[in-house]
Length: 259
Image (tube, one colour):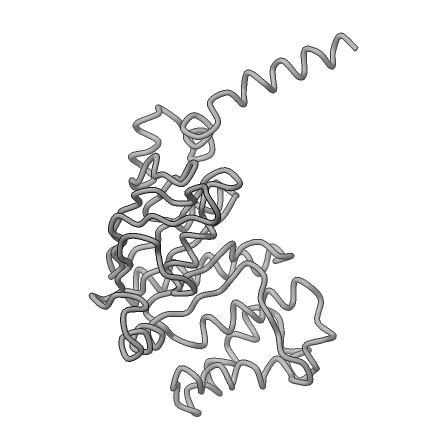
């Protein structure tokens, strides 16, 4: 479904991604994790076609991103990219925005009406669906952006930090279960980023760890825990990405006790 081959990218004189290669099969959820500045957002933008890699290839369903206009349009019909911070038009209601998004991805009007109602209900947006988006709270806007991604019914979803941005516990629960359903029952492919290991462990089949623009590990969650002897993904990631953190915390608390 998704193939990244020897991708290198840079901003300025320093590499942001260096020789990155991996595949994601249909019906799988891949979580990209790593410390701040590791290249996660850059990689998501390359997957989404917002930029072309300086070297290497990104292909979705066998079609290379940004190779020709026709090929790029074909990919965009199959892909929805949701950035961490979404832009919203003015003077439009939430329901109108979802209808317009469905039409962009050529979802039938009848299907749009039915699916929108279910999404608004499950994300608790029904009471404000016919109000101008400018009056929505941060969390309500996040829920609306997630509904936009889901109403597209794309086989490939690229979600940059979908669980952040003020999403409340009900929204987190709804999103987790919907993503699990889409991959297990509908064979969709999901690539997401998240700084919260507990959420990653619940929704991801595989984890790709980036550090300084390079892949440190790419494996199923269970393999990462087995490799490190950890009981949770949180512990495994701390060992793989931040092995010095526990010593630094111990030193911090020792100093606090003495002060």
